Image (cartoon, rainbow, N blue to C red; front, side, top):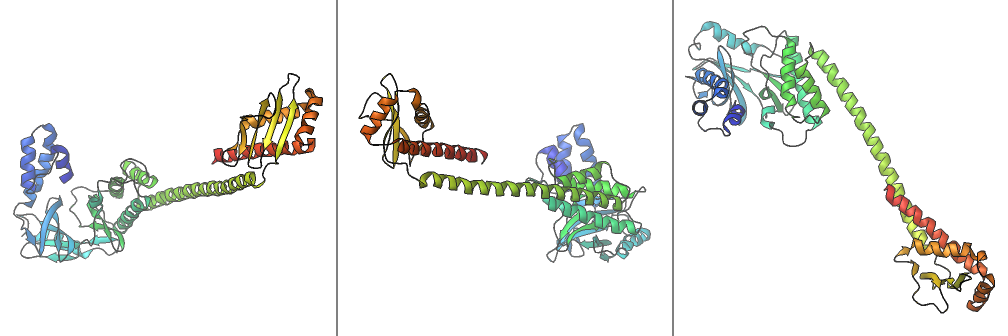
Length: 397
């Protein structure tokens, strides 16, 4: 009810039901009429009922029926729900017996039933909740938690199963009736007066609608199960339990599959990271051969020269020696420059199509042999392959 007032007015007036009713009445409009009717009914139902009942100071109204009105409150540090007879019926012997009978059912620990009947000075029954309700968690602002949704759904199904086993129905299940206690979620039941016959499927629909509010954005698979119960309720709790079990099993299998794939991806990423470190260390472990090498001599007097001091390799086309300002092909800090390395390797591979006599004379002058030049080119080729492996590993990572 408080939420309905908030939605209509944009705020909740202070002062209880009378203040709410007056604010809605002043707001006017046809959209306010249904809410005004409900507020007036609640106000009339609570009229004359004492503010304090059996040591419990009444708080917000939970709901009403033809003979009673239900409040929540606090007593001795515990949250309590009080169901009191309306004024004019609080001395009626028939309804007194009907109210007292509510304390004689139930049995199951999954249900929070009326535990105390107080006949004087105003007849009422009390039910100790022992924890917050689902209504206290709404509205949901964080991403939905499958465990929380499943806990409330299973607790509600257990309570309904205990009721239906006794041939009873809940008759008006709301988020307030799903209570989170130290022993799990339990269903509060105050044996409301039912004006028409109800089916167990109606209780399941109300349970699904209540729990589905934990997943308003339809992001959670368990929330979808609750919404399915609300839209197309099964005929019995047993069918609902089987549906929930299948849904949870499917969800568990999907999560395990996703985690297995994630584990494989992480393992592969770890292997690739170790391999990448090995490639980088291997690229730095063997220094280039030292020396100055003529790799090719062209017929146009242009030579391709490589110069290495063991820490850096420079090279490229030159018109004569000694060469100045050769571009860097490889260094420990910068790694391999692929374009420059490709020029040197192609020059060595095509040396036979150049001026071999001039290249041999230049090699003799520089003091190197073809075997030494071949070693440098092999070293550059190995660096090129290591660079390609490193790039592939970094791309896959």
